[in-house]
Image (cartoon, rainbow, N blue to C red; front, side):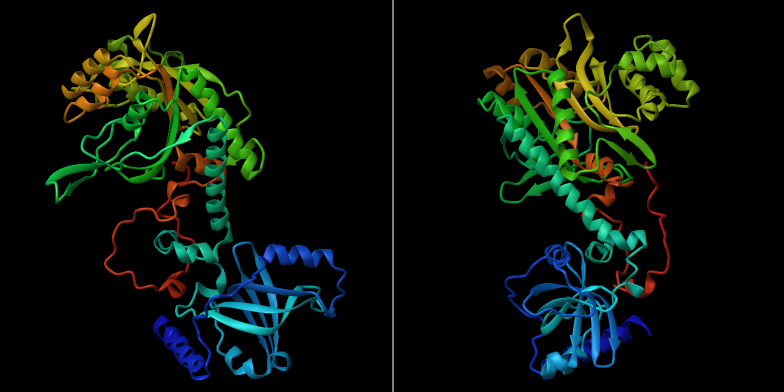
Length: 508
């Protein structure tokens, strides 16, 4: 039967429900107990199989994921946000409701109340004496309720992915718990959660291409932020000494297992701290997240065992480059020769950029265990304080796990004259980051005085990836950006015929 035929049959049942005086889209349904709660109560009761004790009642609601019709007896399995539970429906108990019961389909959302018991097979069951239709499902769910397995369909139809694949809901619940734990950790350290503009007249704070839009009333071109950094620092000038933001950020660049054009970044700034303090903050917030979601500090990600026990190793950038690439960071000739050997194009690139290209190729794949890499080439870091004994070194670290950068931190530059010089070099196209116009307002803010500070940016989506063993960033973003299709016809149930993973390259 085609999908259209399935939908046609469901529309007939919808009409029949209305003919019977049943609202197929329900309404308020109070006092619902979670499936987990009902199961907890049921396990505590001494209920013999095949016996329905008098007095223990339950009121539940969920989506029908399994239906077995046995004459005048129907067994349903419903699924809520916590798990699955069986309902037993009998013609004798439901009487005048029975004609409506015959209009049930997989995917319908129902509410039920009745006595709690066990079947002869020992299955905990709510023996319904009242069933309420809460929403009629007009599209057939994936065949035999085995879950939506086609990867592209899973991302395009996340709503189906969520209700058919319980493990997907587990990932997004984990994401929420991770963010909650980090927020509580920072608030416990007297940080203030703040908001900064998403629409910005001048973009900055990262090396990225922005999305551009236009404000009609002001006849003004604006940019979706690539980072909240420069506005958070303005707040520090104003006297907010510890601030953080879970910031939706946007970068008009490629899509991969590690990149989505719209993503969540955590940025935090702490007055009178430095990048060593930020290492501790990152370790501790990750530990708080792990403790919240459970599973221990030794975790699997992409078939690799990772140990998040703190403290994490600290390694100097120059030492790692010498170890894995065999070149000195300051030897431009040797670095460019290594780039040639690696077939890395380096014409018209600044020395520091070539150094970092070689570092990414030779070092980062070896950074599997959680590791802080610190003291980067200064030319890469226009917003960072320089090392007191070597101005070619920036007081910056990046946090790596499984060869992937999760965080970036600085001892912040607060000297307005040096910052202006760095911005001018950026305008000239030097280094990794370039800028279109000088941000005079930010420089003015620095002239009023920003306290010495440490700052940290964390890729929240990537952190969730490694803590939930999700191989692609699209697995941890509810609605990732997808390429357009000529027609999304909703043929999920019938088209879902395999375990295609062509759109995902596991672990990068």
